[in-house]
Image 1 (spheres, rainbow, N blue to C red):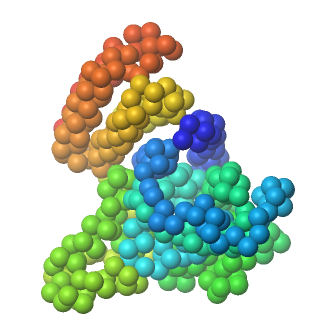
Image 2: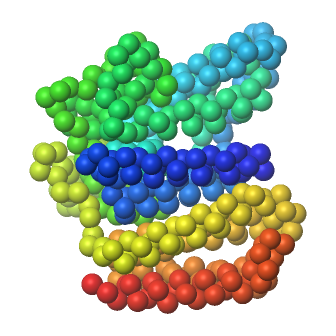
Image 3: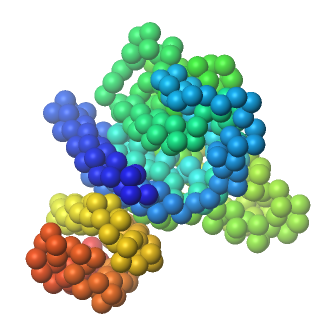
Length: 415
């Protein structure tokens, strides 16, 4: 937990810098692919994901350690080749888990957030799931387990394999020659994020494109077919918490209202997007049939509101950076505090993105945030030891909560 938090303290500023650099580069070249609110939504989603990961709010039905302990045929010594094999094994698992997330209704809920942006840029790479509470796909690491690759090696390589998927989420890099035959490139991944019928559910590979070519899911980017990004049932919100549970909410609603027991049971494992005929008729859901006539989600936002949201995001990044830097200290104060702090982060993201959506009751979410923040100040008047670094920290946090609530009330009332 603490180690991963320290890694993120380095990774988060690096990712943010690259996201802003892409924004600047696109503006300079007259091809800006990053909208402000979409970027803030993506960064907010990244904040929720890393918070969940650090807190370890998920379980594996079958752990990798169990697979090694019970199924290993040999036990590999830890060498450079062990890390290479671990990287390849993780990429193999990534291909199949990614593919299954696209194929089945239930699993799609774990992945919908990553495809929810109607842009394709580095920021959208940070849209990662918080709704996966049970990890089912560790079984695809069976080849590594049979070879006895140590769990500690997998633990080291996994973040590297994940971070290596960041760079190819961009429209500013064209095809890359012979590398197109070996690794996943921006061109390959543009195809994957497109909702065009020619491209949908293709190119599931994460690092090595060979998996798609071997298993029949490869599609080259076509000159005559410009990718249109997003999902066929657009989420119509900037709120990553809503997005993460939107699809499973629809599944539960369909299971409740459909009249056939057969449909109540099977809809979970039917192909992604399938709905029983009766609920599809009674409760139709908007679906994009023509990608080229799609209108992107873009609630009105003045320059002032955008500036306010950026300020809120920067402050939120300050809160989470302190959280990761002081995880061990906060945990020592009380084991429950890290989860309360994590909940404060989630509530903050929810409140900010409700305002971005221009919901008239966004102030209510902000009021919950202010009240919960005040409760945390009651528990820890110096904001979990922040006064060691910043004098009068409790007063500063309290002042921020009050100012944030006031500003959100004002912006919620503006058209």
